[in-house]
Image (cartoon, rainbow, N blue to C red; front, side, top):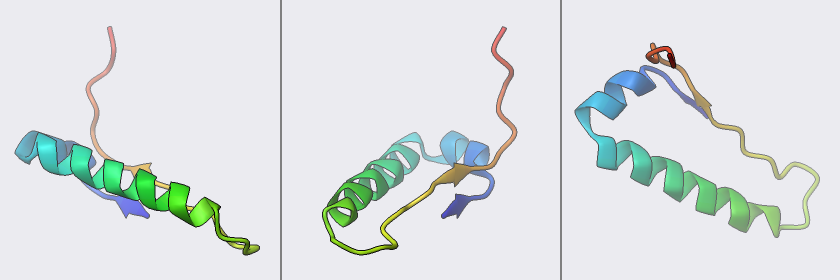
Length: 53
């Protein structure tokens, strides 16, 4: 899953972004218990992030 403009999402709705990541993390934990070959969820947060100085 790719979050495009994640930085804009964060600026617009911090709670919404944190909640979305939390829900997806919990989903990935639940899916990891399924005995299937393809049980991987990858999250990519694409955005213009401020540099750490």
